[in-house]
Amino acid sequence: MTAHDLAGLHLVESGREGPLVLCLHGIGSSSAAFAPQTAALAAGHRVVAWDAPGYGASADPEHDLTLDDYADTAAAVIRARDTEAHVVGVSWGGVIGLRLATRHPDLVASLTVADSTPGSGTSPEKAAAMRARVPELERLGPRAFAERRGPRLLSEDAPPELVRRVVDTMADAVRPPGYRRAAESMAATDLRGELARVTAPTLVLCGEKDRITGPDASQVLAGGLHRTAYVIVKDAGHLANQEQPEHFNAWLLSHLHIVTDSRTRKG
Image (cartoon, rainbow, N blue to C red; front, side, top):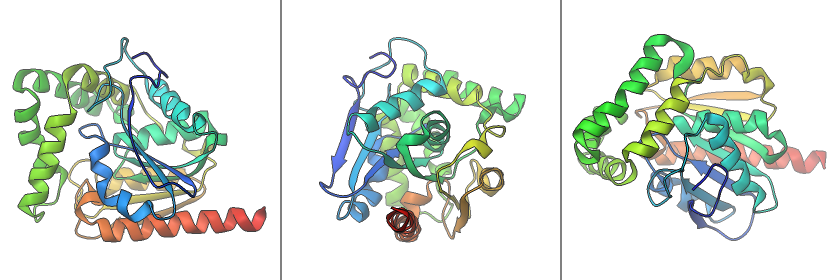
């Protein structure tokens, strides 16, 4: 597939009525990561979760993609439904969502950014560490790579069955071409200077025990955004939406309802 081409993009859709919610997964995952949210949202929303280009059941891109390309592809998903969307992004998906909100503000009704970061380009060390993941994946292969990295995405107290599910999702989702492009998009990105341009009301969530990006990175996002609420999800690691779905979903649904009610009153 080429950038912004939806023909090779795999989308998982649920719900038939209500506002559109677009879910963007992290760099080591797929649409399967949002299964805990789909059930909670589908009763009153149309939910679309993507396998990003080069991930899961989506085709590999024919060319390298920048963060703008991922954001523009997400915008094309929304435009194809002739509406705007509440965008939910986890980790890398949150970075894409933030860029989507600055490039296409008319398409983003609200943002939820979970366990995310301004990008790995905030320091040479972080950029190098992100790029170093690619040869690791190529050397180990997806399964061993997932076995090594997956458990750290959760807290040390996460149940073994959840750890296994996260590892399996990563092993099924990642492959070197897509991961390399995604890692480069992160390594080249520093969003700190553009956070103030985000006009969509934004909920920033972070797992209390996030060992990957951590609360500090989420605090940078929350501090740089104008219309934001910041929540720590207790007893959750980097994948707070999967480790503590009831708490995560309660905050997410509250955010969506507040935004929808506010827009209805203004309209």
